[in-house]
Image 1 (tube, rainbow, N blue to C red):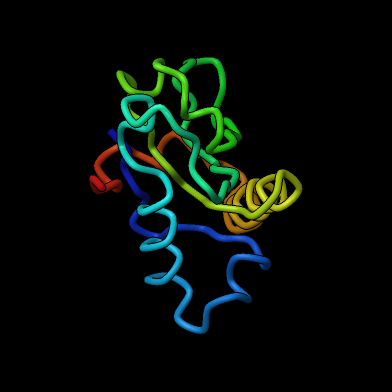
Image 2 (tube, rainbow, N blue to C red):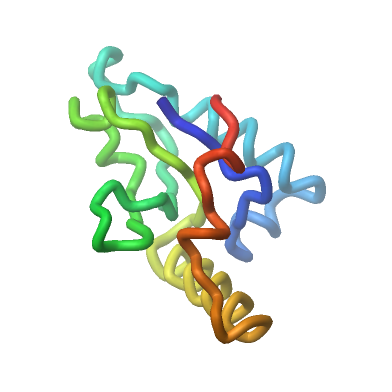
Length: 123
């Protein structure tokens, strides 16, 4: 199942397209990234890069192309989306912005404590 962060991050390319980007982006992305892409046996027409919480305990985040969500692995895995970008560089920029803002505000910044699973809501 896909869970969305309550304060979803987006890159400039996604934000520029829509004046009320938060609602519009969430609606567009939720339509293009159904919970079970594998069962439909087709790739979505539009693809985005998602910044998600890593399933591996050694990593903080992963950058995932929505075209990868075709694989069966994602049908059985919970995906916690923190940010949406139009391209890979945009996803890296979102990650840089999160880390820069966090460490700029507090040197003891802990992303695992900020991005807890209770701050995400289901699709």
